[in-house]
Length: 383
Image 1 (cartoon, one colour):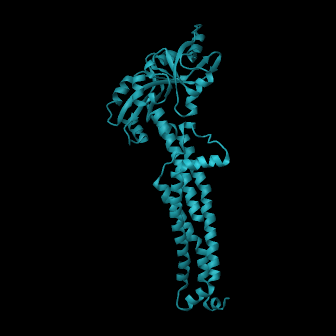
Image 2 (cartoon, one colour; image 1 turned 180 degrees about the horizontal axis):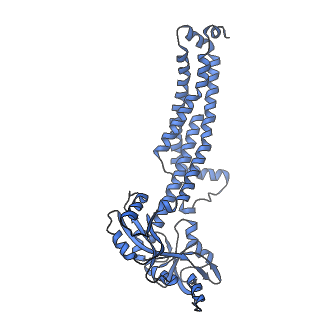
Image 3 (spheres, helix red, strand yellow; image 1 turned 180 degrees about the vertical axis):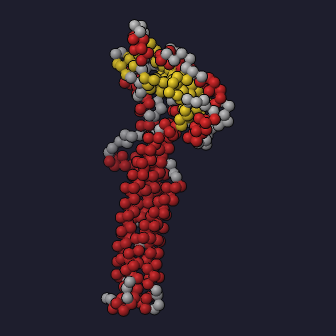
């Protein structure tokens, strides 16, 4: 029972953490693209670079972009979000913008309108039809030359939700032409978004693009590299939680040791009789280690079954838990998570089973050594 519960909890935790991690990775790719090509300077030859990228067999779509920080104001409510200028037609091939629009119509997207993240729109108390003012760093540069630029006014076309509070509360989407005017980029852009064919390794292919396709000065950053700190934190969280839960199996291993030790004490006369009849001490020791192995195997199998059943019925279990504790599942809906996600990895099952079986087998080692050291004469005199 101890091994079963330990294996069950380990499988549940690792599979749920895998589900959250896989969902976040998928969301990152959907909102950022597979690869971003950028430079420390404004890219003026982005059209030539796009033409070269479109010749690559592994590239599905490309789109230019420009981004920066602006001051956005609505009814004297200022905010300082990121603004991203895109080509609506090309961007839709890389990132499916229409999947994230919650209010408004993408067909109305033009140089006079912007889309706001839901969180940002809520903070500004702005919705479709509202007029917002945009102040850019270019205004400060022009002030140094005694030139005054008035803030640019835009109409809010709609809102979007990516599922990431950081993006939804701090992002404005405009057309690329608008962003070029706001930042004085002329005909330039800050980078290019690239979408790859399914199954292509983004990190490896980004190295190939830098070496064989892109001109010097441009770097290709995969979504894995640009979010490595975030993904590293998720992976470490899974490892730390699994490490803590491993102690459940360790506790059950001590229980196995105690149970087998009691068996040695109770069967001292039987052990002495077996040795007196010609049984070798090593064979006596193996029998107790074999008991630990059987306990580990049966507990692991039952733990897998119990874990899979709990994960399959995770929805009703969560509802029942909420009802019993009179609490709300407040995390549902955050990051577009409306149920507990699950993602199974074969490696998790292999690691957990190996660890549980090995620890259970080793738990029988101490009783086995005690049994092997019993002398037949002393064992037969035992009461």
